[in-house]
Amino acid sequence: MDPDTHQIITQVYAAKKDSRAADRLISDYMPFIKSETAKFLKRSPESGDDELSIAMFAFYEAIKNYSRLKGSFLKFAALQIRSRLIDNYRREKKNRGQVSLDSADDDNNELIDTIMDDHNDYEENEVREATKQEIEELTRQMEDFGVSMSDVADNSPRQRRTLDICGKAVRYARNNPEILADFLRTKRIPLAKIADGAEVERKSLERHRRYLVAVLLICTNGYEIMRGHIMQVLKGGEAT
Image (cartoon, rainbow, N blue to C red; front, side, top):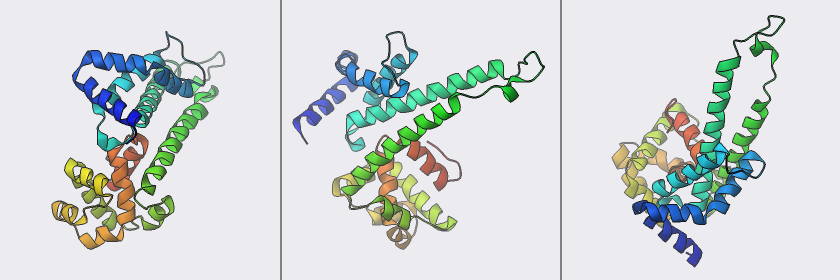
């Protein structure tokens, strides 16, 4: 671990316990917070922008929720900020729609049938860009485990029964942080422990080991968009 990485992790852990240390860390990293906000807004944020306040709070959330298991703190914080900004954008869009969609124009046409939703493409682009960043970061992290995206695609479960088995294994690992810690430390999935704890067939897990590497990495870092999707797939709609 390089000195700069060690220093910020030390600062983050101190900030978890001391609100003044958290305030100092937020102040020190305001250029970073503003930069992440600017990426979302496509312009430099101003002091009165709600988005900047949301980004600052998201950075504070990242401090509280971070652990060494989640990898780089700044990458984790960036994903947290983008996720909160997207959530806020969606809420604002929904609220605007609730006010206007039942109104009618002079020709008695409902606005829902006449207005162009100028924000759909914007929102989709933001989600797409955030997802792209998560995939790029995951791809880099998987390299340390000797797994590529093509490996994951080729190794993904094809049958519902096998998907259910993988789902049970992932949920057991998520509920037992020591297993995830062991996984990150050794760069090997403790298949025997997971199979015994989740009460599933080890052979099924072994056949889909590379797929499980990707899913477990998603569970240990700030991959919020991919994690939500993966958990829906693994258990018919569960998203966390």
